[in-house]
Image 1 (cartoon, protein in one colour):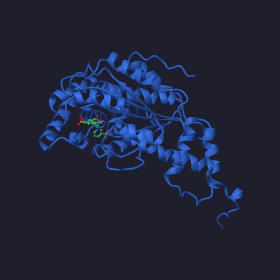
Image 2: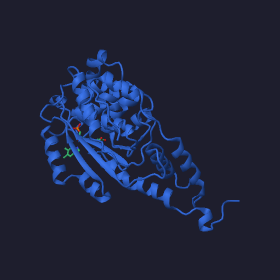
Image 3: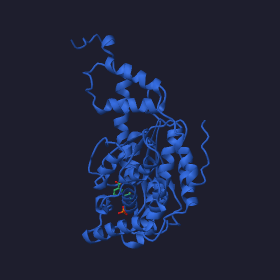
Image 4: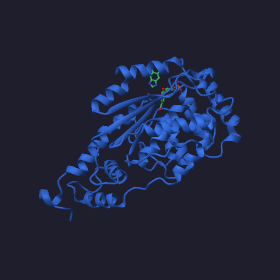
Length: 341
Ligand SMILES: O=C(O)c1ccc[n+]([C@@H]2O[C@H](COP(=O)([O-])O)[C@@H](O)[C@H]2O)c1
Ligand SMILES: Cc1cc2nc[nH]c2cc1C
C-alpha cells in the first residue's frame, strides 16, 4: 500500500500538496458511458449522478464502491476559550470524547444506522493550543505533528471517508481561519457555535477580528493561516484529507469547522479538495459563503449545527443510493424500455 510521507514542517506539507494525484480518466469515461444507458430520463437523478461519478473518478477504479465507510472524528482544545467565546466550558471536549467512546453521542447513532466504522482521535486535549488572539495557535512543528497524525489515521481499503470534529471553542477557530483566508468583515464569518447569546456574539466577532490582525504578518498562505488560527483537530482533518487523496478515497466533509479547516488546503493549492464533497450546509452563517469560496455546493441542508461528523455520516445513505443506482439499474437495452424519440 501507499507509504505516506512523514511531514515534519509546513514546507514538507507544501511539497506534498504539489504532487497530489488526479482523478482517473478511465473511471470517468466508464461512468460517462454507462449513465445514458440507465432506465431513466437523462439527468433525472440530479446530483446523485454527480455523486456516483465523483466516487468512481476519485477511487480511480470502476465500478464505484461505497461499502467500507469510515468516520474519523478529531478532538482538540483551544486556548482562545479563555476569551469567553463558547457557551460551554472546555472540559466538555474530553467529556464528549468519552461519550463517543461509550456510544452515546449523535454521531454514534448515525454511524450505527449506516454501519459506518467510527474512530475518535484525541489530539493532546491536555495541551490546548495557544490563545490565537495573542499570537500563533501552534508552532510549525506542532502543526506538522498534528497533520501527520491525521494522515496516519486514514485506513487502507476504505471506500469512503467521513471526517468531523469536536472541540469547545472551535467555531471561533473556524471563523478566524475563514476570515484569515478570505478577508471581508469578521462578522460575515462568525456564528453562534454551541449557542452564545447576543453579548458573547459581539465579543466573539471582536476576538476573531483581533486574532486575524495579530497574526497578519505570519500568514503568507493557507497553511500559515491554519497554523496561526486553527487547532489540532482542524489540522488533523486537513492531514486526513490529504492522505485520503493519496490513497484514492473520496471524502465527505461535515459542517463549518471541517470545511474551514480544509479550505486552508485549497487556498494553498487549488484543486486540493477536488476529491471532497461538502455533505451539509451548517446553520453557521459563514458556511455557505465558505462553500462558494472553495467552489462547492453542500448536498443537503437540515439546519444542523452539531459537528462531530454527524452531517457527513448522514450523507452516506445518499452516496450509497447513488452508487447502487449507477451500478445496478437496468439499461434500456436489457429491460426492453424504449429510448426517447
Ligand atoms: O461545524 C459546524 O457546523 C458546527 C456548528 C456549530 C457547533 N459545532 C460544534 O460545536 C463545538 C464548537 O462550538 P463553540 O461554540 O464551542 O465554538 C464543536 O464541538 C463543534 O463540533 C460545529
Ligand atoms: C454537548 C455537546 C456536544 C457536541 N458535539 C459536538 N460539539 C458539541 C458541543 C457540545 C456542548
